[in-house]
Image 1: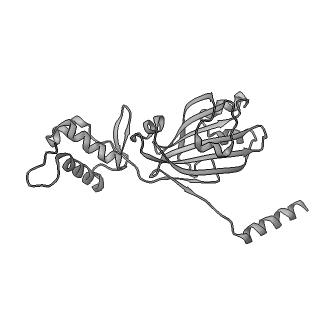
Image 2: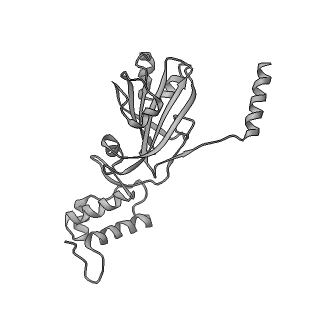
Image 3: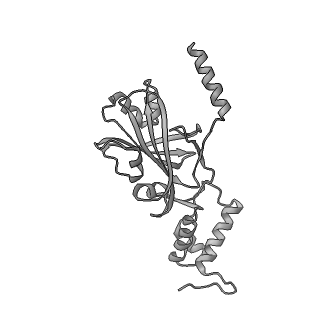
Length: 250
């Protein structure tokens, strides 16, 4: 049953939602700021806890709020992280990596099948990328399990490609598939979004200068937190590049 405040066509939870949204848009609750707890809002608005919960859920579903397990709800920062499509690491320098796990498992994501990944178990490095202390990317990178232990130890502080480069293993070519997918499991938990909420999914395959090491991976993030860019050289630029290459070999 939707109770309504006297003199208004809005239900109680719609009135609470509208007031919270007004505070967010006016800067009373700025981006990144915590929202008062359900208990505090229940007392302030003089409504039931269910009413406040519904209002907060609506704002979270529409991407205004983000929830962190054990910490509460925060106003979502809307500025997306920009990633170049020809790179595996973010194109900004204010990110940090949180390593979640390093396991051995097979690639089972159907979106990866076009890359024809190996059928045997690979090393899987799962991590969350933060920008300004807000999670912006969930990344699972698969690579050969015979990678040296010294390189693996660096995965906790660096992107996989960065750790490889530090050991003179460079990415030579990257193939990418971009599509949408529903949030599931850990992805929903990391970003505080409902299961089934659409996310941007970018699957990639990277060939490296070490013929025994090929990277396969999946990056996922809510659409409002991750943007992609691509640079396509003109035919003239490609011709000039080839001429310069031939001159350097002469």
